[in-house]
Image (cartoon, rainbow, N blue to C red; front, side):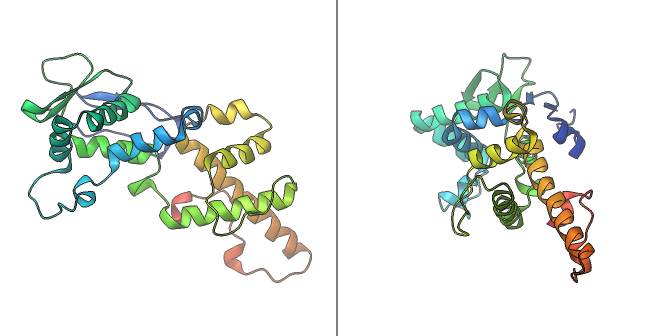
Length: 240
């Protein structure tokens, strides 16, 4: 049996290249334009793919996979089935057919059973989606949200165009897009970015601002701790 392990790295994700899940389908990274067009639908699509269904349904101790549980729910609830079809179609750009009789999801036209998603290859599908959307092993988790808030606050103060954000406020994606577009002076360019590269640029903008601010302070005679003088050209992953 051929492997369903997908090959990709940070360079692939930054370039926004579609990723092939061998013998199954091609998975496409979402652009900021797609996300902003209907952010609620995007979140639902994402959650439908990477959400822990067993935990949500308090069925952790039952010997069944999340994928199998998903198929069972699809067979019993047409509204839920429609959401799952929408989610897989969003990331694959293919027609989706739920096949409860064999516990599988057909992606696109039948090709000798090669394009069937099952409990065995679904985790790899999830891994790709998590990577594209900076979830799981590619996510900065809590530190990412804190960093985004810090960057926004500094950016707003420097430009004096947006109100100060309260530390308890939720930072929404439109605000982030607006800030990065102001930096680039090109909204269309930002809207065409894939989410992974958008967040990469947004966080890196903060690194550069931190470095320049601390450098100016040091040149003015202030005592700046060594750990605050990190050069902004460095891997984002080290902030985990």
